[in-house]
Every structure is written in structure tokens, then in C-alpha cells.
Image (cartoon, rainbow, N blue to C red; front, side, top):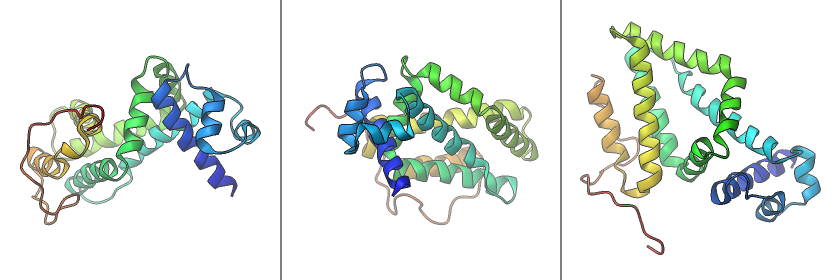
Length: 206
């Protein structure tokens, strides 16, 4: 029950922060959204910053966890691509809300602090990706690490903006091709992905 309450509070906080911004959000907003008492929230999280710190720590943990795959360098790269894209497909609302915390001016400094707290894990991620690219024969493994993360983070951003219009399965197959990986035997996201259309952001009410 404690863990369920804690998760409900964090989910509600993520929604409220994304909608209202860090400074405009109140603990009362979060208690209402979570359906819990103010005392319960302050028991787990003494203030708003504690909530954001927990949410951003979780985000960084999820990013650094992509390295927890085994196999040959090619198999690891394929698993990383699939893991990120499947996470986007299965939890897009959470990705959208977390992204807003990372880039919003009011909470970006808190993200920088979270990154500093997780410095060892972030370095392990960077070094692990660089070692993987070095094993694949990359001339500049550090640049390849930056490029892979930029591409995958760009996919998360685009999918967050265009949602169901974004061709995740076709992007997955294109990434395999781009990195010289064997074409996947099965679809991971859509069995029969439609042709790529012209993506447009949905207007209010659509």
C-alpha cells in the first residue's frame, strides 16, 4: 500500500508539473490529482523539489539502464534501439511529461542537479556506448555515442509531438539499416506499419 501511494503521488506530480510548470504547480494541485491527503504527500516528499528530484532521478535511471543488455556489439546496439523505441511506444504520455521537466526553464536546473547526482551512472552509460562503438570499428566512438543518443532522444521528442502519426516501426527499421545491422525478422511495434505520411500537430479538440 505504501508503494502504491508513493507511485500515485509521483504520477500525479508528473502530470501537474507538466501541465502547470514547476513554479505554478502547488502541493494542493498534486493532492487533488492523486486523491490523497496533504499529510501523506509530505510524509514521502517534504516539498515540491523532492518530488521533481525523484522524477528526474527516475528518468536518468531509465536512460542509463539501456546499457543493461548482453551479446555482440551489433546485438547490443539492436537491443538498445528496440528498448528505447518500445518504451516510447508503451509509455508515450510519461515520456512527454518527463521531457517537459527536462527542458522547461523552471526545472532544467533541477535536471542538471539530478545529472550531477547520477554522474557515475551517466559516465558508465557514455563509456559503455563508446566501448560498444569501438568494438564495431568506429573511428570516433565518442562522437558515435553522442550521435546515437541524439538520434534516439530526437525520436522521443518527435513521437511526443506527433504521437500516433509518428512511424516508430519504420524508424526502427531505418535505424537498423543506418547502423548496418541485419534487418529485423519481426516487427516490434506495428505488424503492418502504414506508409510515412505528413506529420502535423493535432489542434485543440481534434
